[in-house]
Length: 105
Image (cartoon, rainbow, N blue to C red; front, top):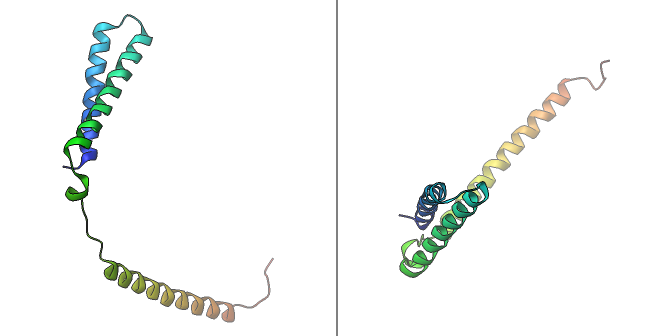
């Protein structure tokens, strides 16, 4: 499971726990927002501390990058774009040769 999923899950859990606690505890709207925000922030920061200490992101999420494959793909796409550009240029030239240069009012 990706670390972003843990952060999102615990932040949402913290929001709902904070909302429930603040509905029970608070007397004013300001306290409702304050408690909800504070508890959500606590859960958000807490899960970041847990992830920093217990998940080694360098080994777990290492994705190999094949430079040669990406360069070959990029070169192929550049050649295809060049061919399409030449085709469009030829079509525009034939259209300009076919239509008269006079403007119609």
